[in-house]
Length: 147
Image 1 (cartoon, rainbow, N blue to C red):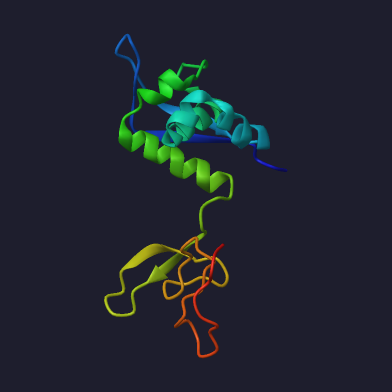
Image 2 (cartoon, rainbow, N blue to C red):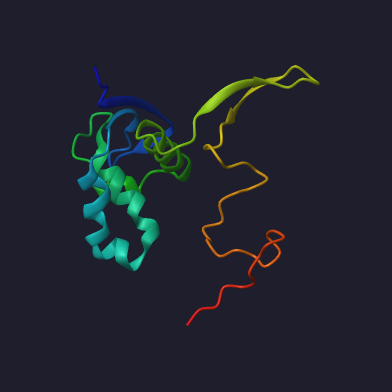
C-alpha cells in the first residue's frame, strides 16, 4: 500500500503568534497539480525561489495543532526547518538521489553517501549544456554554430 502521508519533526520548530512551539507535522506526497499550479502564481513568477514556499504550503497538512497551512506559515519557518522540509519533499517524492551506508576503508567511519544517477559521476557531472566542446573527442566537428 502506498504511504501518501509522512510524519516529520522540525529541527527547531515553528513558533506561532501565541509563542507556542510546533515541531511535529505531516506532509503528503505531491501531485502533478502541486508542481504545476504554483508556476502561475505571480509571487513565483516574480521570484522563482518562492516556489518552495507555495509547494510546502500545499503539501504540509499539519504542523503541531495548526491545520491551516498557508504560505505565511511557511515564510515564518526558521531557515533550518525550511531546508529540512525541502529535503523531505524531495526525498518522499523521489526527487533526491538515493543514499547508501558506506564505511571508509581507511578509518572505518560509517556515513551515508548519495548514489549518482546512472550514467553520471563526479567525473562527468551534468552541466545543463548539450553543446559539445571542440576538444571533447578526436572526431569533433568543431564548435556549434548558431544562427
